[in-house]
Figure 1 (tube, rainbow, N blue to C red):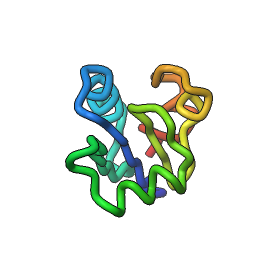
Figure 2: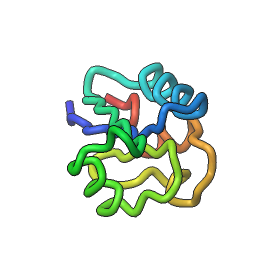
Figure 3: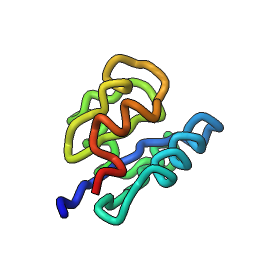
Figure 4: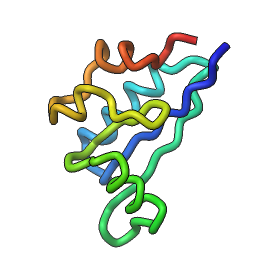
Length: 91
């Protein structure tokens, strides 16, 4: 089984909460999930660097194995089909 590293970037909004819930609901035992809270007052230097590295300009955003999920790259709402296409839940 291939491990997947899933990173979710959030800012404490209802849409962010929905994204975290959807990823958790879809994930399988092969998904290692890390949530990054990037609210201005609490952002860590590591999270800030990751935002830059991944080219994230809109939250919430999901990255799977170092690649920004297509819906996030196209600044579309996070969707079940896009997460599945990125490999979430396909252990």
